[in-house]
Image (cartoon, rainbow, N blue to C red; front, side):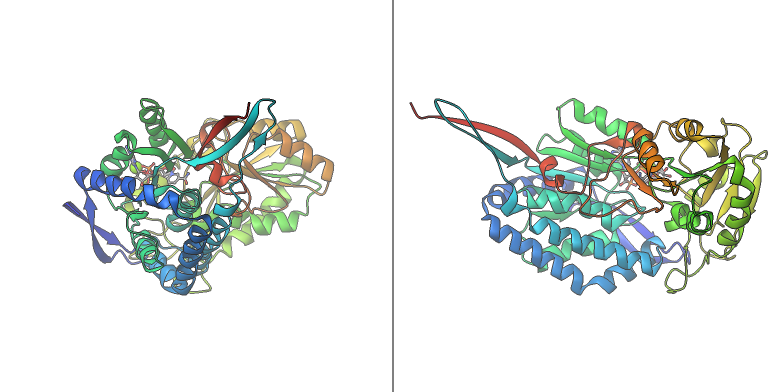
Length: 456
Ligand code: NAP
Ligand code: MG
């Protein structure tokens, strides 16, 4: 690798330097893309059963290394050990799921009178995957697993802040027997490596997860080459609690719905909408649930919430709270080294406060009252985003009516679960473009080709 610069990886729980990582420059990026381009010719020709076997071996290598990967993530990203194990397990499970794809990427045979008409799902070629720092392992896997299964090769750019688990996944792929160049991990800056994915014509698709601002630039850049793009961007999701809900369960789980991963989650339910008749009661129940959140050493199994990713990000989160913001109550967090921030519940007075309209990406939640179902739907949709959300009610009709009316890609009823690797995931409106995961994930990494063979 032609190294121009390096970056220090910091443990966000201790502020200590963990290691130094080399960053690729533009020439190294082009070289990796060239390798991926050459490797793809052979990779797409690997028999489906053999491609499946290699992906299964990759999954087994991740499983054998699971505890190591999880510990790396705790140190690099401050994720709680429980979450980090789930994240590494998610990559393993995704690879097993993807291993079922090569033999099931079925085309069609379409009736014609004068011959045979068939469709093929052809791989795109080289895919560039750009990953943010909030979920380094799963978000990488959501891109690379189906892309590889469909016969593409992948160059993965982790976020500069969190490259360690991605580097390890690259090593595991090679150890599992994936041919050289099929899956490469290239730490580097977004403005250098990521930007080259957009401009280098040998990259046929960019999968980007991150801020709406950068996602917009990537889409505009890709448009020049009509390059395929999938975008998973921000969110401002609503957790809608109706008076007929199991209030105890809704309040007890609300902290999980927004403070998981210290709120650094695009699916965070950062607006809790509560029907006015139960508003005070809900807040009474929410307060002890928030105070119970254990913030501290992410390596401890009993910890619920770790630190934020960086000092700069902590400042960004703090800046969302204006002097006039009404803070209802907060949880606690450690003092001293570490980028700590307490779980914070605010009661915004006006709909214009930034904490109500923008993605905070930290442990801050706004609680807002609504009168009736129509107002709940209006408030839930009163955002430029549309990624996820929850609906708490005991009325199945209402659950379905509201689910259909909320403009978001991933809704859960009486639950905050958003992500299962076998169900589709993605956003409405400015939360993104395209879908990841689920039964159709691999199709997003193919072109449909129609071939007609004359028989007359
Ligand atoms: P970001 O700037 O969008 O970064 C996400 C990824 O894109 C990183 O790998 C980054 O690389 C890369 N990147 C940055 N500029 C690029 C460019 N011009 N071309 C190609 N790639 C580029 O996000 P962030 O700065 O880390 O976070 C800012 C805010 O975005 C967060 O506070 C949050 O609101 C939102 N966000 C949302 C999600 C989500 O899951 N929806 C994830 C992360 C962030 P480097 O970081 O290495 O430069
Ligand atoms: Mg950025």
